[in-house]
Picture 1 (cartoon, rainbow, N blue to C red):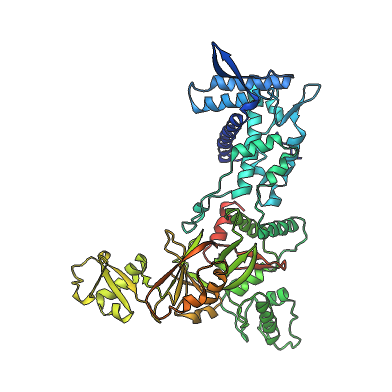
Picture 2: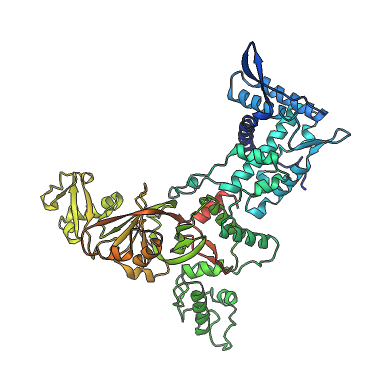
Length: 566
């Protein structure tokens, strides 16, 4: 175990821990309220029944010291303040248990140390890196038993500091170390909060508090698989991967300085013919690349582009920062994804219909460009709409449509669109565009073969105006790099998706949807709303145990690594 008396953290971490200690005290205060059955007694005074607080006397010198420190904390707090209320409730909580500390113990010679239960937790803290966390976030200078010895307030504070460290560990394990919204404005996921009272209640009652803290980690299959992969890295079981550098598209017959590394990565020997350039991308290496692409579900074209490079660099297990960053994002996901749900992984350009945690059906998708990113959030699919109108988003209307309308009002009709003002259709030629304010209008595209949404869309109403839909440009699905939309998610085979999505929907069938095609817009409201999760994982671990890597198209992964200080 490390020497806790000398562990130092940066100044800002110390401030953070002080805030967390206050949170822990508040949590323990709440626990004191939830445990009042042990500290309250009903009495009758003058014929009136009343309740009085019962404080159990300390039964040993350490408990007496804790009582003194807690009493001094109450007296030192401003009268009537929140800090005084918290300190008083903490005094009541420990008073109900004879002021016996949860985490400290005293030997016969008066030496104060952490209890056996606390030692188990400290060992958990020391191994936090194996869980994708940072041990130094929990083993701080505040946990210095020797420095606190003989100082009642310091010993009382030490109890609080240790509880604060456990609170932070539980919170980090449960929801991650970062607020997802600080990583990118396109990430619309609020941090999950834990029930502090329930945590401390469980910690106080547990034979092994470390097990309680471990229970706050996600149990999603892929999180557990990434954790196992991380442990293998730390154990030295995985060699440093051969990294293929970024560069121009490498096509058969070209020469490239990356070819030797590519040969080594795929286990392909150099050509025996010494007259051939060592950096020639020859037929033998092309065949190996095509076999690799087929195995990972990429386009089998032998062209080494960004998607193939990302897959090559990740299939060996990726790096520790990559693994930790993806584990962090799994902590952002809902604890319960749903027994039946839709998962879209943006970097993978893939949609899965999940049943009991396993993929029951999947297809390719097209997501937003770097400029028009697909936002990340969870919601519920509630409606299926056939022959949809496309209500042109304000950003597209402002930046793309209106500039063309100003120069040619006939553009609206040429795109099977209609101009609306006050809910009514307006002839674009009747508008004096030299005087009109374009912001007073909106534009929608009528149903039809040219409609950008295709024949069907799947709605989960949200503030981003993002949904899943068909497309009239299906040839784009043949590309490996499919960050091509304005933010919505285009589905390659929408009616096969509808078949999978509506498996448990009693009132809607695919036949019913298809029977409406070619007519006006029709809405079908789902009785069983299906969870949909738009996520961002650059590492996936398949049920076959293989690690697959995908390009960090929006830079979220790099940003997480940077913010975690890795």
